[in-house]
Every structure is written in C-alpha cells, then in structure tokens.
Image 1 (cartoon, rainbow, N blue to C red):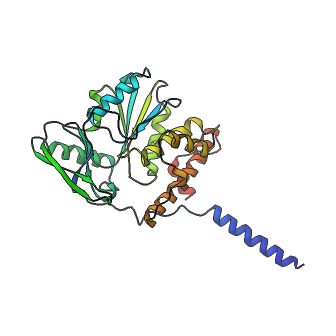
Image 2 (cartoon, one colour):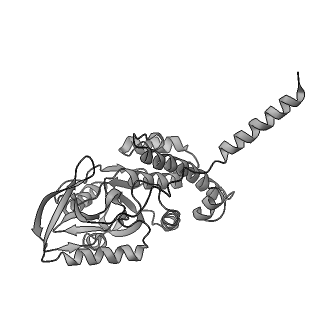
Length: 302
C-alpha cells in the first residue's frame, strides 16, 4: 500500500474537516435591508383576552406571546396573578425593533416590508420616531391595515385617535416594569442587543417574572426565551433539550426550520448557527473558559 497516498489523504480529510468546523455563519448582509414604513399595521385588536400565542414557563419564571393590546395586557396581569405574581414583579420585555404602540388601546406598528423599517437605526432614533408618529395621530382620523398571506397590507378601517401610548407608558399604567431590546424581525438578534440582554438579566430580582413578546410571539420571542433558558439551565441541559422545552410550550422549532424561499432559509440557517454558538459561549462564560462579550466572541469566531 502506498503510504504517501494514505498520508496525503489523511491530511486532506483533516483540512476538510477543519474547514467545515470553522466555516463562517451563512451571510445575511445582502438580505436584510431597510424598507420604508408606509402604513399603520393593526397588530392586535383591543379585546379582553390573553395575547395570541401566550405560553408560560413557570419553572424559569417567564412567559411569551404576540404583541398584546391594552386589554390583553390587563388579561395578562390577571392571568399571572393566579400564580401569585404581582404587577410590580412583571417586566414587559419588548423585542420589537419596529416603531409601535397603542392607538385607542389597539396595538399598532409602523409597517415596512418584512418589518424592516427601522433596520440599522439606533435605539434612541427608533424611540423618537415611535413617539413622534404616535403623537401625530392624536385627534386625527387614522387608517389601519392588516397583512394578507402574501404580507401585503389591506385597508381595514379608520377611527379618530383619542389616546396614543408607547409601550413603556402602558407598562407603567399597569404597574409593570419595562425593558426593550430592539431586535430585527426574522433574524438572530444583533450582537449589541444580545450583549445588552445578557448584562441586563444578570442582575434581575429573584422574584422577577419576564414576559417576552415580539409581533407574532414566535421568532424573536422564542429566541429570547431560549437565551434565558440557556443562561439558567445550560450547564445541565443540552441545547436540544432546551429548544424542545420551549417548543413544547408553544415556541417555534428553532433547530429545524425550513422555508421554500431561499432568502428565508439562509436567515434560518444563520439563526441556527448563531444559536449553537450562543450555547457554547454561555457555557464557557459561566465556567470561566471564555471571557469577553458576545460581540467579541463572534468577531473571533465568525
């Protein structure tokens, strides 16, 4: 047997294996672009019921849902009171990057295609845009739109706005805490948002109850609930166990998402790649084998 061929083959396989192991995350830079906002999207009608896609993780003291309306926030507070959780213990964790708020109690958002009207904007810029847009609706006839299955807006009606609130103002009215991590829809959160979230949740009171929400209560909400679960349980539970737990509660199956559209599949592949990295990062950070921020970690491990 030719020993040199065996050695060359082994080296080639080793290099191939290393290349696969060190391959960069699927790039989404060419996909995720700002889109101009153009209509008020009616996210949730103001009804006295629990928010759509509501679920509770009692063990980890958190819950998640779609965007609640004002009356749905009231129902949420009532539901959590059955678990002996007081409003002052609840922190409303707002994951929406898109400008949004409440008009006459209804939950609305300023819609651009793919919910990407605020992509690339700083948090302070988003909050100012949000406040300005909500304020301009006061005493004005305002039109609302709903999206069809192809994500195209259709006129649903209009009404004169008498009350306009930001989500932080609404949380204050109910006596809840409020935190915002303005994350782009569909994708894994930007490094800065992940770092801000990790730092923030380290010092939470032990009796805090976190209620996460995005627009639909699926993508971003599941991602952040998984991140919180990893932080609390990653040393004893596998990533598969954690993801399965959050899926069983009502979240999406983050590790096994498939789409017919190539751009959505690339985004989901990137999300899975980053999620696996995040699990490794948090375990190492807590064990002391990894130091530095998440931003630094993925810069070194792209």
